[in-house]
Every structure is written in structure tokens, then in C-alpha cells.
Length: 174
Image (tube, rainbow, N blue to C red):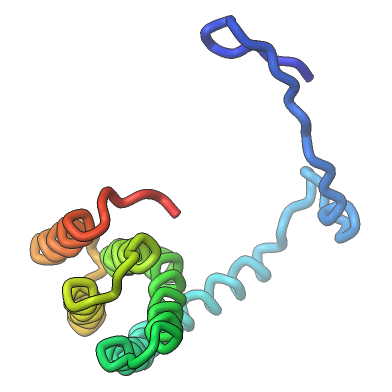
């Protein structure tokens, strides 16, 4: 199907990608998911949500170990390994925080991920910022700050995002 841009200056072809997965599973647009399956899925997500803070706490401890490893890294390879481990956890939290009702945790994690992805030098300023982010994640988790409008939580997010911007530039969606 060909379309014209809003300004009327360009024509482009819109191509619908072939996706046979639904057909192979016998799912059509008219297929409705049975209510009991939806209820079971909802119960599973709620159960996981209840366990999420404990999982976060375990990952925070692991991130703190990696932050110490970054501080004491003797080689660039050791530093890179620590950075990659922290970045991986931050990326997971970035997605999982919102899924399990912790949007502030998600934003702090996104800031930490951006910080580590954009930094070219992992010296003292970045190491300190990493620790600040990890401590902020720990605070949000321990206080179970789920409300995205939580006044102290919003202020905390604003501060860590400002710190990241000062060190590596504007935050971008990644």
C-alpha cells in the first residue's frame, strides 16, 4: 500500500511484515483468550510482583559487589566486566520496574543504564554516580515506592537523572 506523507511531499510504500506465528498457533483476530487463562496469567503476574522486591534486593547486593569491583579494577578488562554486569542489571530493572509496579525504580535504572552506556571513562565521578544510582534503587525498593507521583521519589529520580546528564549528556530512550 502506498501512502503520502503529511506534508504531501513524499510517497512511501507501507509493507506489512509476514507473521505466521498466530496462524500456526490457530489464533485469528476473532480468537478470544478464555477467561480462565487470563485469570491464571493475572495471578502469576501478581505472585511475581509480590516476590519482586526480594529479587531486587538480591540484585542490589550483586550490583554493589560489582561497583566495588569497578572501583578496585586493576585492568580495563576487569572494569569492563563490572560495568557490563551493572549495566545488564540496570537494563533488566528498567523494563521490570514498570511491569511490576515500580516506575520510579524503572526510571532510576534507565538513568544508570544510560550513564554506563555513554561513559567513556569509569573513574571516580562515574563510580560515585553508579553508587548513588544503586543506593537510590535500594531506597525505592525498601520503601516500596510504587506511586510515580511520590514526592520524595520524584525528587530522587530528578536528582539521579540530573547527575547522569551532567556526566554524560542528555538521557535518551534506549
